[in-house]
Length: 214
Image (cartoon, rainbow, N blue to C red):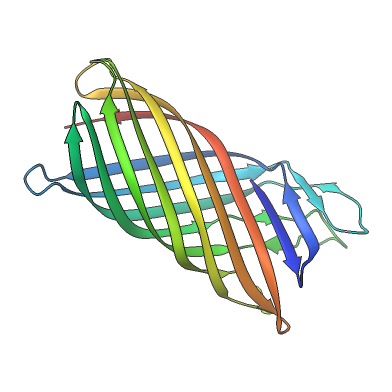
């Protein structure tokens, strides 16, 4: 995870190369008759290591702190062809991804951005063979809100995009194992003492999943 804060076009701090580990649960409920589906993800994890950087200051290591997220989407499976399917969805996502600065004068300073996001996207899944398949999604975030939990910063707008892709192996008809990658790229804007501050946030990672279908 990386985060960069700019005030009036000037970088005032950044947190970069933050390592993370997380566990999450994903569900998808689909009606074969109507082709509508409801899907969602909820996860919790920890950020650790990483580097805190301020202009004209000393770069220092970051501490360890937790984070969480969830989303819920309503979608429609629009196309089916040759063991593949494509659909579209719209939904809501909540992200509370934070980090704490190194100790300064015996105190930790926290950055606690909370992202509340509306998202629309496309999703696809299918089989290459009986045993090997794939699934992927791409979401655009046209509008949202960021709250930094700071009394000096007023919440404003957020936008961005997200994507993920998995390759899967199906040892049985009901079980599958997948290996994939995910990328989030968000931009938030807040007001600090009447001046606009921009927060650039990215998270990229590899994922391992096990899923059961019934």
